[in-house]
Length: 546
Image (cartoon, rainbow, N blue to C red; front, top):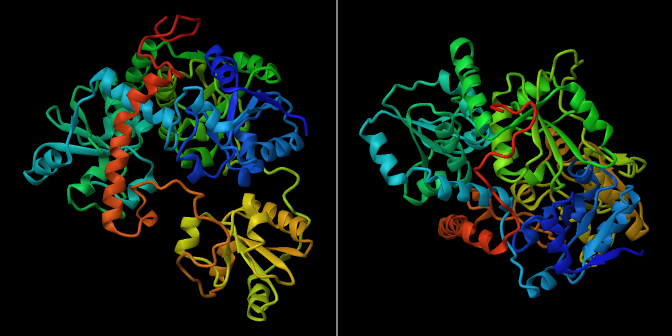
């Protein structure tokens, strides 16, 4: 296969030119998180067919693949060619060549967004409070309101005792419904730093009137200070209405005017769609997941505003593309757009009246699944699989992530990573047939197809995956046993306790993580690949405040 190569200097020049480019790194997340290019989007080869369609919707997009000299880029290029992508290049020499050219490599996940949060803290001098100071105020009964700015599932997992869940993108929208007096100190927290900082600065920019601070280090710092967290919390800010909704809209419009957020109508959106062969377009609904499921535009995908700012690379894979945000009252879309524009996504706009005259769809959007998912392979049910395993007539491979596998898997199942199957088959005992399972049916289907091709033996898919096995009442095993691949598929985040063996390991990792975030602005300055800005962009038609 003949794929063009690009050297590190030429790629850096292309980054500065500002044209549309998707920089894709096909290594597993845990490997990617150790060292990667700043603007690289992690799309593991194991899940490439399942993720690339949403991340890079335009087939004529320029895609540059980078790895660590392990051949994954060539394999990814082959798959992308099969899927119809035509403008493919590979970074010559991979990470080593990039480093040798004097360019920066970054560790961590969603680094541009985290670096942006730290840049905001430095630029805006966002006020903050330590875990010890907050704890003292809460114990003394001070007039303090703690707002957890993360999604509901993260909040329920662990939070500061007594906090109320208001994700970042909902803060301005729901603030008027909160129990806040004129002297109330508002503290915004997350698990680390980024969403605390962006959340606090969101309320400050919106001019809510109260003193607002970020909790330094979030729940991670709270734990390191020795304080207890609350688990299973269900306190959420209500939907705004009446005067509080009007105030939210006024505040959002003022912020949008400051940063010249552009609003577009349906005719402009139609013009954007007509240019989709030459310009990438992402139409993203930033409301809550429940609102999206209740009714959404058929042409939109979903990314809760809180996550779109925090992890833009999980939803938008093409730099310098067009992003159009959708929201019923525009408050969340305007606030989210203002942050994206400051973070360098200058062609972000908000669709006016997005639901007027549009026939809405309900439910979750259908996932992108290519035609080659192994749908033609035979399936077996949990009871039949149990009989085969007991008779030692099948080898079961589990393609769940390593954390899920550790927490629970079918007894006897091998942990496997799809992109490493060729090597794994040398480790796994021989058998009459293979069965693929996991928590993602589409991934298991793709893996089963690969198993059949690589082994030359029958491969089956467990109907319903691990969930069906559990629902049938069959036993589960825990721990890391039967490893057919290294468990480096996930990046170890300090606030995910399941990634660590003991408290001491967690404490060290948590402290390292917070220090890593603090050094990002300096490394970002050395890199010079992104220009963040608090200055409004040039005025344009339909800008707020123009």
